[in-house]
Image 1 (tube, protein in one colour):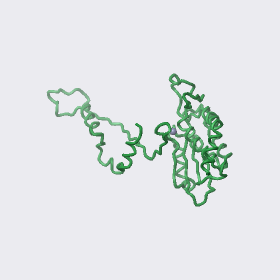
Image 2 (spheres, helix red, strand yellow):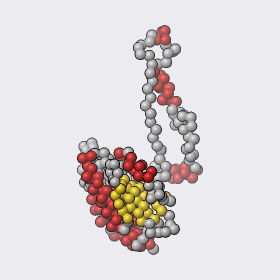
Image 3 (cartoon, helix red, strand yellow):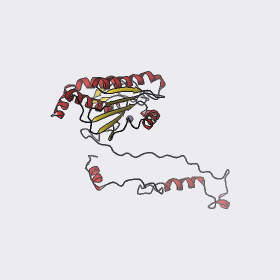
Image 4 (cartoon, helix red, strand yellow):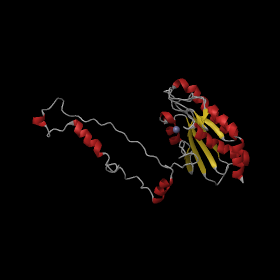
Amino acid sequence: MAMDRVDAYLEAHRADFEEQLKALIRIPSISAQPDHDRDTRRAAIMIRDDLAAMGFASELIETKRHAIVYAEWLGAPGMPTVLIYGHYDVQPPEPLEPWLSPPFEPTVRDGNLYARGATDDKGQMFTHIKAAEAWLKTSKSLPINVKFVIEGEEEVGGASLEAYVAEQTKRLACDYAVISDSSQFAPGQPAITYGLKGLAYFEISVQGANRDLHSGTYGGAVANPLNALATILASLKGPDGKIGIAGFYDDVKPLADWERAEFRALPF
Ligand SMILES: [Zn+2]
């Protein structure tokens, strides 16, 4: 019953929500460009105010760079607490030539909304906020406790959030963390993204002789740096795609059979 009322509320306010989302997207909150610091701040304030108007205790946390929006609704004692992460900053839109419509003028084409930040991450973040709003408007409460942490530095390394999380472990304590910054697998097919590969990168210098060495005299005895480098690079990964670095897989959980079955069932 409660869920039906939520669905009805979301449907009834669909057009209004789309306009609100467009207003947020029109703000060029480009965290990497100091020229846009005032815009980035405007986006944070808009989200803080939206959450406050819904009944969340909502505030801006000042940082060395861009503010973090923190908001909580803890009116469901005994129920789990979910922390929802999102970010209101966006990547710079350059280069501009390939854009079919201006990056900060949200435009609907074929039923999709196109603009910088529409899917990363303003759209997804907005979905969570409006879901909470629908519950609060229709049931006067949420079925669980909810904390929002919405940062403005995701596209520039997130140093302020890292520091904030480290110093506010009690405040941010939760049973589940939901990251809004991910995607659906396909239209009409939502996804729970619970694992992503990370990055590891290195710079390797291989030094050899500082002059040409006569191949007849030295060939085969003194390693050529190019060959040495090729050997090193080739050893990182086998032809089967497995990484050859000793210990690399020590902390990696193997895929379970049910996960393989789920992957096979996807329309890919
Ligand atoms: Zn993102």
